[in-house]
Length: 213
Image (cartoon, rainbow, N blue to C red; front, side, top):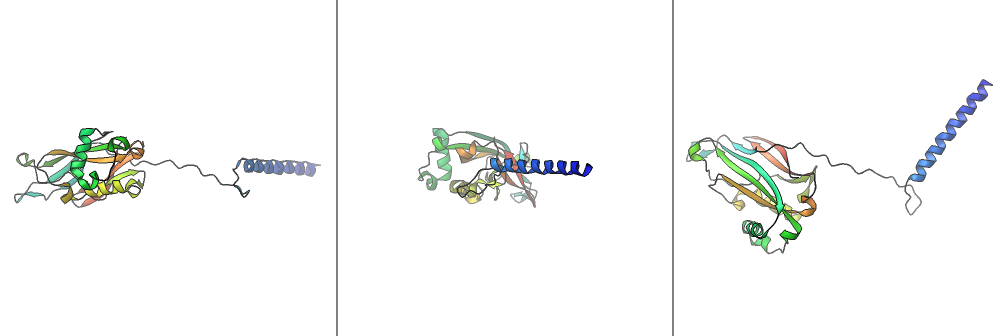
């Protein structure tokens, strides 16, 4: 009698398991060949830890001016995302030149303007204006998680390479300034958008991240 009860319980357990499996299978989408399609959940983008501004992105303790070692720092003080207007559009084309001006981009309609404000510092107050350009270190650029946006957009790739090349960006005696980037709106409105900076403090290099939204 006890054995019979155990068999009945076992049979019921097996039946429930089979029915549960069938129910799960019925809920699975079916493709045109009648095969069960395995659905995958969309993975959330994992943002990198963001730095608080201002942040030093380049430092050279052996920097020399007129033969004197004074030390030099390039610091990002603020980032700002905004709409292009007529003035900022003209300024952008003046900086990037005819190679971009003649491409027919509609900056006011399709892009957001990213301005990255910087300052230069030297150790001596009397020499606050070293001959250096406001630029990004090579390897810097826009990312969403680990996805490098320039790999999907030739215009962004051009801008990032332009801003990381000293002789293209030009030199300045000013202690403060900014650099400009045109960001496609589909990227600019992403809450996970970050600016990845290759930070160089003397010989030590690493990536740091700044939130843009």
